[in-house]
Image (tube, rainbow, N blue to C red; front, side):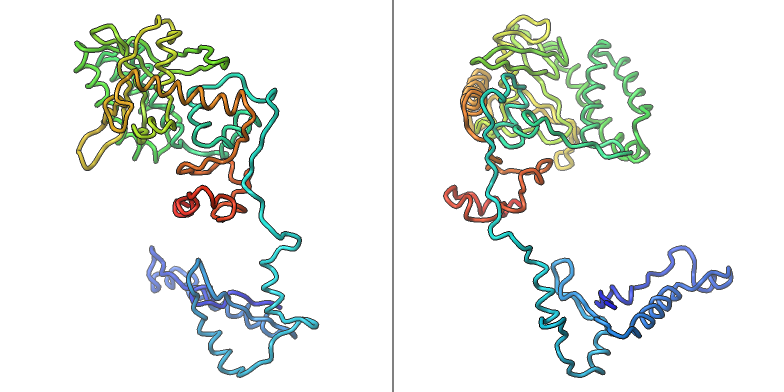
Amino acid sequence: MILGGLDEGRWPQQQSPDPWLAPGIRRMLGLAASERQQGAAAHDFAGAFAAREVVVTRAMRSGGDPAVASRFWLRLAALAGELPEARLGEQSVVALAGMLDVPPGVSTPVEKPCPAPPLATRPDRISVTGVDQLARDPFAFYAAKILRLSELDPLSSGPDAKWFGIRVHKFLQDWQTAGLTEAAFNIELAALRADPALDSLASAFWLPRIEPSLRWAAERVWASRDERWPVANEVRGEHIVDGIRLFGTADRIDQTADGTLAIVDYKTGAAPSAKSTGDGLNSQLGLLGLLAQEAGLGDLAPEIVDAFEYWELKRDRNKGVDGAVKAIRGQKPKPATAAAVVERAREVFGDLIARYLLGQEPFVPGDTGKRYADFDHLMRRDEWFGRGDADADTGERATDAGAA
């Protein structure tokens, strides 16, 4: 018989007071005392402890911290005195327990995966968001776009961050389609509040936070009507660039007073930084600008794009505002102009497709501030992440381990 878990707080289990009924009221109602569970546990332990051969164990550490032996364990140790080491046949039980952490047949962990599928299996088309995924984590692109794998949504799950983002985009799209008037805004807001997909938590906590941000976006559109005005939303474009079909959808297109275009992308979370654009990790808006200028988006004719903006639809408590506009143009580090944003995106796109889609470069996990998620098990991340031998020459292992 093995009796384990004799650590303080685990056995005997700590009793928490009844948050609703006092002990006296429980007795008046004929309910069992809260101590009865502890007594029943002691009864079961005493019966098991009377077996012919008993092994009593405890954990030296719990949750990464040293564990404290239970008072009953200390009492047993004091009464038993010096006992001989437990053995199973010719081997020590302690040694056998240590062998559980050494799986047989595994001498060295796997290296970081580097799949290199044949050129014929590599895609000949890519989305603007797929370009960013390829730049940040080639292995995730390989798993999602070549193996066509995706995470299954949990059963009976409530609205999550992805759903919130899609619903906000739909709200703004429907409002723009309805004419961008205040009356149309109020109608769409009422429809959002009555959305049957919203559960009680989303209605109580998410709606009160997002409504001021949606109002902020509407007031900003109305305030700038003399300088610019939305002319299209959720418009798709595609164009063959360097032999690969590039496609993407813009959240909103504004036409300015001088005839140029501004591309707006809505974010319900934090917007990408200008530095990530300069580093080639965020080319989405620049590639949409490339499509707008060379092929046109939706029914719009090709036109010069002179502004790229992220609209953050979230409250900033420190600044006391319900939203923010983050323009790529003019921010440091460069690119500092809209034309430079497009040119930088074209350079990144040309380099990536030459290496991964038209070439034979393997799709290794990314090394730039990575946050693995969906494909951890597929890449066997736990077997190589944090080890210094696989990437010692890159000088980035310490950063990766710290990020983890």
